[in-house]
Image 1: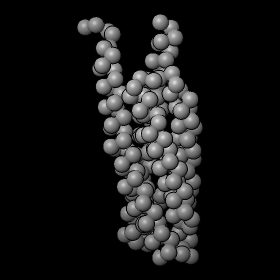
Image 2: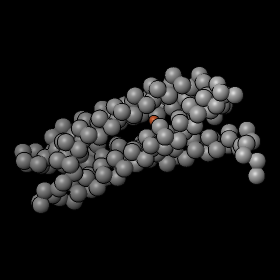
Image 3: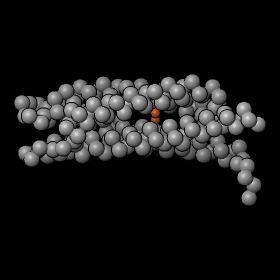
Image 4: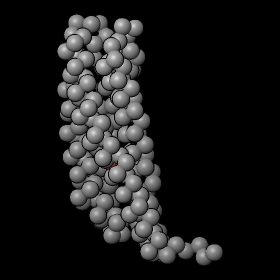
Amino acid sequence: MNAQVPIELGALATEELIDYIVSRFHTGHREQLPELIRLSRRVEHAHAGHARCPEGLADELEAHLQEVESHMLKEEQVLFPMLSRGMNAPAQGPISVMMFEHDQHIDAVERIHRLTHDLILPDDACNTWQRLYEGLAHYAQELTQHIHLENNVLFAQASQAVKGAQNA
Ligand SMILES: [Fe+2]
Ligand SMILES: [Fe+2]
């Protein structure tokens, strides 16, 4: 088989990858985060004064949701359309901004882990508290995979394509 990937196939792969990222992770985060904020408000209210109460979690999650939402909109409206059209060189600037924001998202998840004592439930945790920490663990996993797929696959492919073009 010819080692060269036809240009149409390369474009299709990028678009498929983008569709997958948006439908699984962007849509998923938009569903999960408001629910996690709702649950954390309930827990903070019901267990105020409890030694393990994750005080400040709902506010932290709300700030995180705003950052993630504005980040995803930039990807959907600016960067992903550039990548689908193969505009890999001009995409390098936006890619480095997105990678910087990914690091900020990871910092937010670390703060969330500190506020929740690494998601370890107290013995007397109610159902809502349990659902909250399960949801947070799931969210952190999804976010990690999302960032991995963008940094190490989608963005890496675009950077490789630029290097390839320079060496050609
Ligand atoms: Fe994304
Ligand atoms: Fe991203």
